[in-house]
Image 1: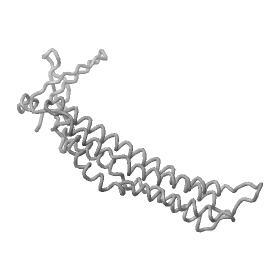
Image 2: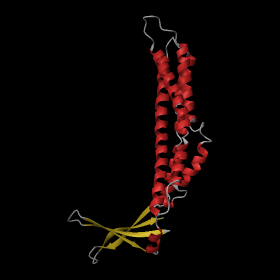
Image 3: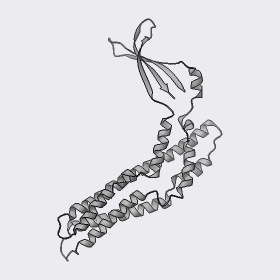
Image 4: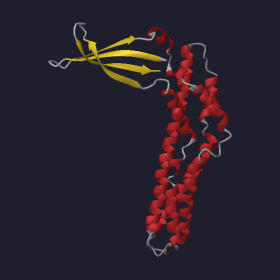
Length: 259
């Protein structure tokens, strides 16, 4: 559907006042306005429907939803372990080389992310938990329907936000630890060239989560895009309109909002 709104914008040179008036007109505006509803209730699929669909898939993909982060963590762990094995033990009373400390950091970061991802896969089920709660909420009135849809949207957005934070934390920590290990080991006679090469490769693999987003991020982005499509872009065309007194014509804009 299409709703035209004429917007009059008047500028007075002798003062800083700007008058803005809106006039809904054309193509049966009253009928079109009556058909408008809350975006949460107009989007297809609704947030509650998206939750129900994703809840069915959530249990089936429990062990695969964080594979990009797990791959990055596994390479960081491997590079840390190889760096530790390539570095000879520190003599008693001696000082450990920087590569040894870097290896410990890489090992800890990689192992920490693997444990974190496993726990998230086992315990964090936002869609299933929220779908059950939304299904039990009353939906008799429009207000109750809106409340359920907005709660569903909050859950979808919260999961997407968590996915974004995990993605960036994974990239920064895994790539950072691997790069630090590579630079600490480069040129050192205590570590082998293969350990340096694996550390550099691990730093590159650490960027994989940027290329392969989590399902949480994808669902959040899709739902946001579908909701934006309810209202089209706003177009403006210059025209001549009457001023508030109705006696003179002045330059203005005619805006068209497509639904």
